[in-house]
Image (cartoon, rainbow, N blue to C red):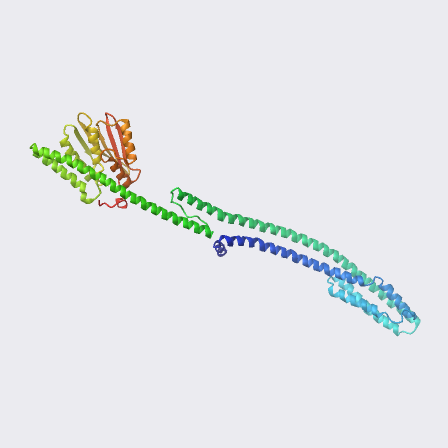
Length: 481
C-alpha cells in the first residue's frame, strides 16, 4: 500500500489527471458490461423460450382430430386415405426432438419426452393396424390404441405449452427483477465511484492549489525582502520543482544582498575611520602648540608632563594596530586626553572616571569615549563660565554595559538637542566625531546599540553608550586597521 502511494506521489499533474479519469472510466465500464451481460443472459433465456413457443405452435392443436380421422379412413378402406399417416407422426417427432434440445425446465422436458414417446408408440400401433385384416379388429385397435395415444400426445403437448408459457412469465419477471437489481447495484456502485472520484478530485485540486498558495506566499515574502522562507510540502512534481527554484533564488538573492551590505559596511567603516583619524591631528596641533608655549615660558616640568600624557594617548590610539581594545585601555586613553586638557584648562575643567575592576577586560571599539569627552569639553564646559566637571561612569545592566559621559556645562537648547539627535540618526556630522562613534557602534553591535543624548540648557548634558558585555568581533571585522 505504501509502495502504491509512493508511486502515485511520483506522478506529475498530467499523469494524476489521467489516473483520475481512468479511476472513473474503468469502474463505469465494468458496471456497463455487467448490466449488458445480465441483459444478454435474460434476453437469451427469453429468446430460447419464445423460440420453443414458436416451434410448439407448429404442432397442430387439432393433431388428435386429424390423426383420428386419417386413421379411420385408412381402417375403413376409404379412398381419401389409402396409406398410413406416418409422415404426420414423423413430423411431430422431429418437432418434439427440436424442442427437447432447447428445453431446460424439468417439467417441460418431461412433457416433451412424453410427446416423443407417445408418437413413437403411435407409429407402432399404426403399423399393427396395417397388419390386421379384419374390420372389427382394426376398429378395436383404433379405439383402444390410436385414439388413446393421439389423446395422450395432444395432452402432453398441451402440458408442454402450459409449462413453457408459465416459464416465459417467470423469465419475464426474473429479467425485470434482475434488471432492477442490477440497476440499483449499478446506481449504488456509480454513486460510490463518483463520490470517490469527487473526493480524489478535491484532493488533487488541494494538492495543486494549496502548495501553489504556499509558493505564492514565499514569492510575496521574497518580494518584501523576507528571505526566511520554508519549503512547501507537496507531492506534485511541478510545484516541488518550482518551490525548489524559488528557494534557490531566494538564497542567492539573500547572499547577494548580504555581500552588498557587507561591501557598504566596509566602505562606511573606512569612511568612519577616516573621520576618526581627522580628530587626532586637530588635537595634536593644539597640544604641540601648548607644549611649545610652555617650553618658551620655561615651564619645563609641565611640558614634560604633557608630553608624557601625549605619549600615552598615542600609544593607546595605535594599540598595536588593533581596532578593538579593552575598557581599561580605552579609559587610559581618555584619561591621558583629559590630563592634557586639564593642564590647558585647569581653571575650568575637572573630571572623574569610575571604572569597576571587573569591567576592565570588556572589549569595545577604540576611541569610543574620547570623542564624547571632547564634545563635553568644547561644547559644554568651555561654553559655560566658571569651573565645570565631567563624570564617566560604568553601570552593569545585565547582558549590557551602560557607559555614561556627563557634564554640568552649558547644555543644549531643545532645538539644538533635536538637531544633534536627528544628525546622529541620519549619519550626519555633529560635534567632534560623534557620528563616527555612533556609526561604529551600530556597525559592530547592531541597530539596537549606539548613543543616547539628553541635555538641558544651563544644566548640562548626558551621553549614554550601551554596549554588550560579550561580543564576537571577529565575525564583524578584522581587528587590524
